[in-house]
Image (cartoon, rainbow, N blue to C red):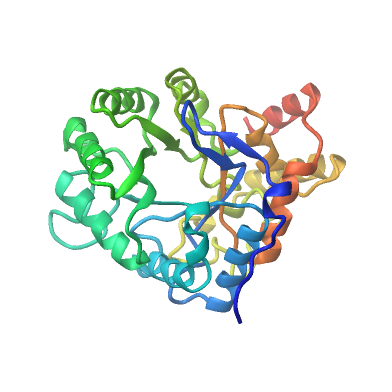
Length: 329
């Protein structure tokens, strides 16, 4: 069946300028970290992609190692992109990353020019693309000189394999240095992708200030703390959840009594506000204008639909913000 997108898709989505660039991103972007691997059902993730685009989501975020197995998410996304979205490629921002382990040997991990250039070439083949819009270094490399890693990003931009450079998981001081180096090379940093949620607040200790000063966008990942900031874990660990998966990033021993108490209190506050806990968690990040977009990963179209409602609900009172801080800190 041929996919025809919703003709009103840009009427309801909100967009924010990414730092001091020409790019605007939707306030909710779709992350393909989970649920787009070879073990996942194509009908389901195709439905998610269709709904996202129909709702005005133009930004789709991947990485070389997303799957499982690594590379699977790019392959699956690329196949559907070619089948359903080929006519709309210029309406989309597609990003990918390299920086974590991808293949064996000394050149398949971290931040060398050899790894980053090779990885992006592989990603482009998997997605059947000539270029991506944003290419990120996925994490700082303690051994490779920062100049080499940033020069690799600059080279990739100048080769036309990516339009913009980004960094991810960089702490404030190192982010500042990376941003400065890229600026000197004539390929300014567009965006930083940190882990940030109501439960993970490290970016508030300087990183957001650096990004604001340098005119760099910010797009948090794991805004729902791997599902903790939803109603999923209020009664413990359900089957088929990320915490129940022994290979997942959320470990069952992290679901402590204290954590459940905290998310239960946050859930009560969300209900008083007339929204779900997930919607409140997303809206809480978006209250800060330094946040360009929030990367939402979902396992179903219904979850995506629920998350998008965060745009249409009231702002936070000072008392609510104080209460949230009291609960989580």
